[in-house]
Each structure stands twice: as structure tokens, then as C-alpha cells.
Length: 91
Image 1 (cartoon, rainbow, N blue to C red):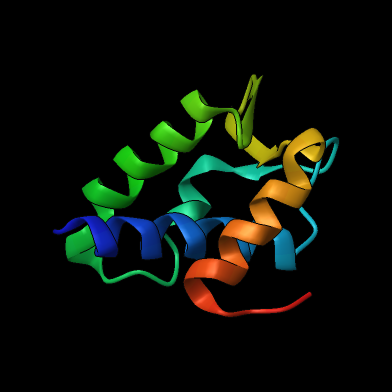
Image 2 (tube, rainbow, N blue to C red):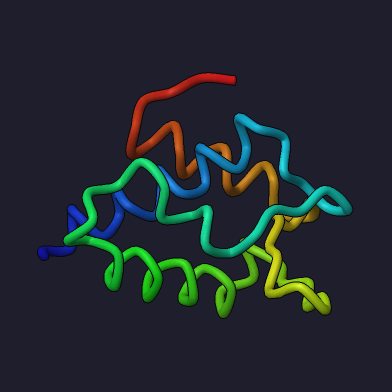
């Protein structure tokens, strides 16, 4: 996996969360981030998603039924610009 592929995976994860409006108080299970990717990329997607959490783009919510995530509403403009740059999608 080269650098360009990693950016595409990051942008795709962020795009799916943004498109579904999983922002701030709305959250989704962490495991759903792997949906839509080939199964052989599962570990890479998980690692990249954890990196997005460390960067502050994705927020964690630990519940009694597992880890949930949402987009950081304070960084939504940055996220949208990154998605536009990599995937050429508009909102």
C-alpha cells in the first residue's frame, strides 16, 4: 500500500461518515468503517481509522456495547476540503 492509497482510504472513510451525517453527537460502531472496502484491506482500514482518531478528525465514544465513532464537528471544514482534494466530491 503506497501513500496515495492511504489518502484514498482516509478520504473514503471520512466521506462515508460525512455523507451519512455522523457528526458530533451522532455516532456509529467503529466496525462499520470497514464496510465497502475489500476484506483484504480490513487491517489497513482499521489502522488508518485509528490514525484519524489520533489526528482528531474522528472522535471516540466508548459505550457498554462497543466503541462508536463520529466526525469532529470542529474540524468539519478541514475534513470536507481533504475529501474534495482527494476524491473530488462536493457537498
